Image (cartoon, rainbow, N blue to C red):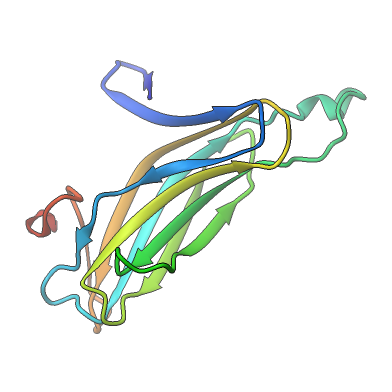
Length: 152
């Protein structure tokens, strides 16, 4: 984690100079009462360091290899996660993902960074937001991903 500004806020960093796939998994998050069969919406800010900017001045190949991912597992014990990928580099961008809960009683959120190449890959993540949406389209954000009572 890296401190920003006054030292009270942090962004998570995943980095390597070798091929990798790495990330963070949330704790098991129970689907709150009244939201069963609805949806879950997750957003996260990410920043991919633009390692190949040199291609603009005749250095590098101009190809970007690394990317950020946001996955949601409806049913934390299941073996299926649904992903959205992000490729914007050199500035903060936002990944969002909305998944139907079906009969899932809980979820997991997966934040990942990947690079298949030998390069200096640095990907930052910040400001994860999770909202449950009921069958009527009404949503509530979580304040804390460890308790159902954390709905705002």
